[in-house]
Length: 278
Length: 303
Image 1 (cartoon, rainbow over the protein chains, first blue to last red):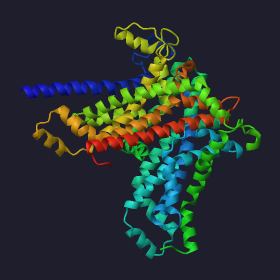
Image 2 (cartoon, each protein chain N blue to C red; image 1 turned 90 degrees about the horizontal axis):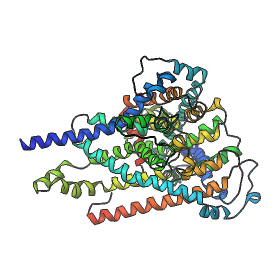
Image 3 (cartoon, rainbow over the protein chains, first blue to last red; image 1 turned 135 degrees about the vertical axis):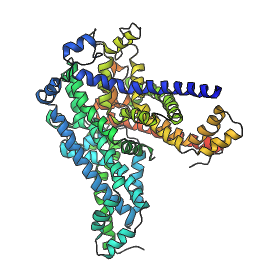
Image 4 (cartoon, helix red, strand yellow; image 1 turned 45 degrees about the horizontal axis):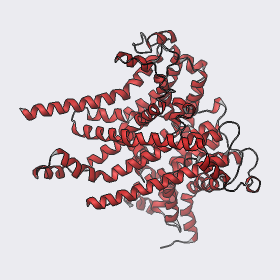
């Protein structure tokens, strides 16, 4: 009886602790969504702490259409999509090469990619900016190439270690059937590493989607800006129109939150993979 | 078994695209930043070392610049809170989630929402919540009012701004540490605890003699990641209070401000980046070294 009570009390304390922290994580977003449905007037009166009366989408319409917020979303989708495709192609080719093919200097080159992941470069964006400016690449192409590079080392590392664990049987069979190396990479290699590709795609997609510094430096024009730089620009323009800012923030955050809840295993794996390599 | 030249070239061509991008966008900028740090290049005309060379003047400026060291102090302050408050909270949460049976998955999912979202979103959202602008719509103070606390504090610019910024940084980051700690806890074999119980070890002894020593590699990893992440914190603080007139200006914000805007001080920015980068490398390597010593002392095999 005594142990039973003690156990229940412990559980109550644990859950109170966990729930209060969980609430602190959820509340700001519920509040954000709630305010995004309110008129500025209603928000002024209750700080958004009372539930919105209806799902009034006029803030969203104003932000998306009149303030042209859709541009940032479309740009971000395009940058993310193209960059991730580049990274997947380039890094899986390289990983296949490092894992399966032999050439002089292979290990040295692979080690170079590894070393790059461990050196912190707090001002890395300065020489990259200088480089892009020298080559006249302060534009979308330059941004995509620079972002491709940022995801490259970690992706090559993840895919190479995954390749290393796979048996060679299927590739041998394909070779006997007369496939060239590039055909083996495309028809056998890529399907085999698809579980690891999922992690690589999520890690890099989030990385590009959430990127701010390079985007802010490279794009001065509104029409090329991706989401994060656009959000800063937008809130700067809208200073006092809080409900519009909330609608914009909701549009930026909610899709990611929903996607994350739907695929949380892959998200956690993808994000921690990047950090725990070193 | 080395192949023919042709075979080697074909094989090498698989890594060539990666190597090209990496060479242009990592290796070249890496060495270029050392060169740039010796110049007062303005990022406008064509770069020539001869014309812009200033020797070590930038490094002298960095070492004597009060604003830079203020930003290092601010970064250190935030890092201190992240190392203590954030990581202890994350560790406690990991232990608690490990203990409970119900809602385990719910907690894991919720705690990791913040690391998934961008720093800009978190910063802007918290700014909306904390800013007293204009008075009357003072959201956080109104919430405090419900709790019976009367406050008119400006949380994104007043006297508490540095502490508030550090706490928001911790709030954004604890999910990371939580996930890594939690994964680490799952790797400790249950038998060790059972054996300890049979030998009469209490919960505190189990914690201090099994959990902590076995988690030393994970703890070291989290400490290093926290230092690297917090000293390079930037976008969230920019979105939250844009440095609050120097009170929360962090090193990367100083570097960024040299490049954004009108007069560009690329050389100084690179010098600052190199100074900070070098400090971070020294700190993280010595952390791994210390942790190896600690593990040897505890008799846990290094891995």
